Image (cartoon, rainbow, N blue to C red; front, side, top):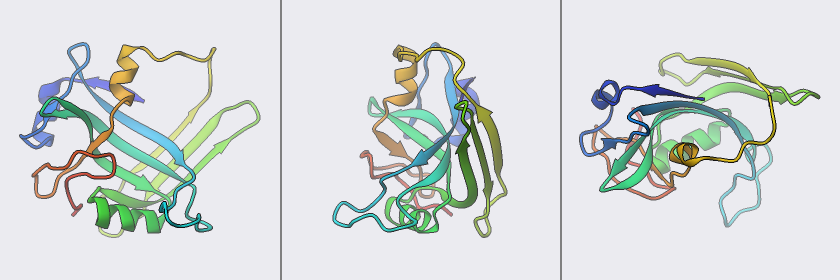
Length: 172
């Protein structure tokens, strides 16, 4: 789910070294619920109970030196180990959450998330969604929101890094 937002409204929330990216003259904020699966270190087999879990992120889109990226305001996950590893290793603003993601026989997905991370600001999300038509082929605008290989956060407001597994700040 994405909403258009005036770029100037997001500017104070993004470090100065990053440019707020726009499409059709608008910045975009996304709330993206999904389910991770097949998660493991490349040199290990999947660890039972840690390879699949719901996740929710709140994001916008940025560029640095002309390269597109994603700025994560927060990422909530229902996997304590993944949260710890992502916070420590990639400096991403991950938070523990109690989450569920279910699909009924008609294809409707019910998604719930409640942040449970110690000392974190409270956050909750609930949504139901289902297909309403035929499969949609992505357009240039949807590529703007989905074809991003670089993640960005900040450590004390200073961005750095530019790889899929690298971002720029230890969460507080």
